[in-house]
Each structure stands twice: as structure tokens, then as C-alpha cells.
Length: 331
Image (spheres, rainbow, N blue to C red):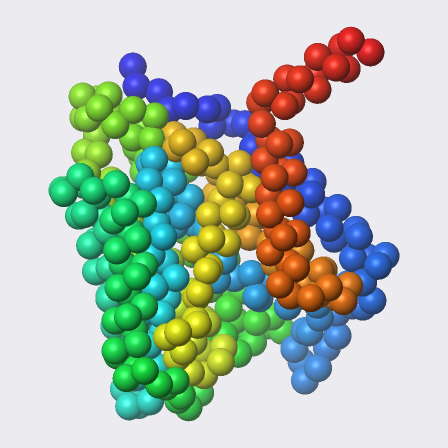
């Protein structure tokens, strides 16, 4: 009988959740007005809401990245897909195309990009690192060609509502992110998709003998990852009302991988935790906000992020925890 690795009832995200709560408590005492929520013109504002809003793109990327990593792969192209989706939407918005086209066309291109990655991995047998690296490099060049090497600015109020609008006092982007996260969670844990993903990550050959179409599932998760990147690209583009193919989504693929690892999903695949990835993305953004609020220069945030990843990874390591248990028993 084919079984995925790991216990589906385990909670690998608890260490990440504990660290995030510690960060929030630290900000309660050492960051002025971090927990202050103000009402302006019927809308809620505050540092905590800013953390949630700015973390939304990373949360979306980590959803797709988690599924890809769970199959034993990796997707380095999500930043480039963000640039392609953002450039396409900005060009269509500047031409005042119908809103449906402005939103659907970039997502369709993102899906094609994801399918391209999936075909390279499943049909041509190229390693996921190399296959997605191809689009990581060429995709941003495609985005720059679409924009003609320029920053494309636009004014499209209904499209801009995606990131600048409010609903019931909260940023509309939070509703979009929450809806997609809930959809991903239901698909992963209430359908056979999650079981197939874990089974493929554990043993692709055994999963094929069990009747699982490993190639189709792998291609699907790359498409889903690219779609998440496409939505993130729309959020980032509408936030600045422009498409900057050189910088939008730059290095966000690294944050997505970090969020996934922090959340308890092993890079070896076979087991994943979407909730942990969400918490990991929130940790990254909260940590960035905290460091900047303490007057530390932005370049130093990269060093602190690395230290945090090492710390949380050590806390999650079975070998480290076994060693700590032996030390406690010896005492």
C-alpha cells in the first residue's frame, strides 16, 4: 500500500508559529505603535495590517512553491512570471482594455509559463532547478521586451482596486489572498491532490505503479505555482500603478522558498504544510518590518533572515531535537 511520508495529523508549523508570536510580542514592547489600528475614512490602517498586506505576494508564491517542493521539485521562475504578468496587465490597462481581459490575459500567460516548466521537467526529464532557471533568466527578458525596456505606467481605477481598494475596512488584497489560500488548502487536503503530491514526493516510481499519473500531477503543480505568481504580479503591479520589469518580483522566489522551509516543508519532498508556509511568509515580512523599525539598514535584513532560517531549521531538525532530548534526560 502506497503511503506518503510524514503524519498528516502532525503540526510541523508549530515552531514557526511560536517564533512569529515571539516577534509580535517583541514588537508590542519595542516597536512604537506596531499594534495600533486607526480608522481613517472608514478604513483600517496600522503597521500590523501593513505586514499582512505586504506579505500577500510572498504568501501566494509560497502556496505554489510548497506544492512544487512537495513533489521533489523547485520553481525558481516565479519572480520572472511575476514580471511577465505585471508587464502584460500594465500594457492592457494602459490601453484601457476590458477589466476581464486585463486580469485574465496575464494569468493565462502565467499558466502557459507554468506548463512550459512542467513539460521540461516531466517530458524532457530536465532537472527542476535547471528547467525553472531557464525561465527565470529568459522570463524577465521577455517582460522587458514587452515593456520596451521602459516602466509602463497606467491609470485604471477598477484594476487598481485589487491592491489599493478596501472592503469592510480591510485591504481588498487580503480577501484575494485569503480566498486563494483557502482554495489551495481545500484542494490539498479535501481532494486526492494532496495525497498524490505527497506520494510522488516520497517515491515517483511507486506512485506510478499505484496508478498515479506522476507526470500530470507534476505539470499541474507547476501550473498552479505559476498562477499564484501571476496573481502576485497583479497585486504588485496595481500597488505601484506601473510595470517595472527589471525590479518587480526580484528575489521573491528566494523568499517563497524560505517561507516554505520555515513552515516545515522539507526540501526532499513527500510532506508539506500549507499553513506553515503562510506562517513562514508572515515571519519574513514581520521580521523585515521589525528590523527596519529598529533603525537597521535594509541590506542587513538579509543577514538577519539567514540567521532566522538557520535557527528555525535547527529547531525543526529531528537530529537536533533528539540531541536536546538526550541532554534533558541526562540532566
